Length: 447
Image (cartoon, one colour):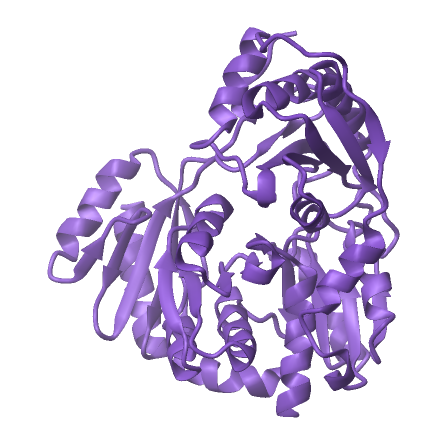
């Protein structure tokens, strides 16, 4: 079978099943993963997608045939795989998942020891070459397959991030989107004095209600409505593999990832004063200001989980946040989690004795953000040059795409990793200026 090179992405491996990625591909990737890392002991997990059991089985066979011992965690969320690999000291791990992608997709996220991710720059390209050429190192004696139940240790670890006794008796609407949250939320939240109103908790890889991607507006309409109907304290929506979560305030309004990052930074710095916090270069100034206000040290970083995890280790940062709902924690082996942010937010509003909309209000009144706006562009380099020329009097940096900073407004424009798109994020000191500058920059991008 001819292997499609396009399935090897910047941060993972992903494609349409079975046309682009299938059991044969999974078997080869299993062999290549073990060959590349030269490991003898790895863990494997899988999500709830219809094709995940057969994909996991084939990947495991490839790894075992290559001479590696494999421990199967069974059906788990992505952050559970990360935690299991780091906590138990495996030399690597793979989760079979396509995260928030539609039902016809599947893929893999790969990590080495201590849950350090492989990416296009570190490992995925090497694995791609082996898979395409069907060329692996000489296999050793076949490995063995083991099973392990990591749920009790995972739940205990996750709950260690908060003081459960501080949590008030909230009523929370949760949308699992038929993803892994339906299985992961109950064992954690049953230990807290909260009433969970579940939406789409049946684990179902056909996603009968909506795609498990709350970043897309239409996928969160139902939970926003439900929060208002139930007069709930907040809503929390998870993506398919639960490495991200998203918040709806008590008024049924979506809370931007910028403001969530700012509040989570506050929640963490209240416990760990003076620590470093990472935020992505698309984020609102609200994040930087909150970090400074709470005695932390803010560091701006380029987008992408591999870059965040690398920098988290370098700066020994306590927390990192991306506006797309990825939140990283040093005490979670520098990995992202969808459940820890939910717990920290509940603890913060319990301690401050306010509701979520009251916490967000001062941020909304001070920081005016455009949200991410995508535009199809044929010549990305040409557009970047035009922006640099137009705003040559600003402070310009090229950490990831182009970032342009003035005293009262700023923006970042960066190319998509997977499509011919430019993504704009802009912020200004007033709503009027934000709208004017947004339209001005968009006119250049689309012109």
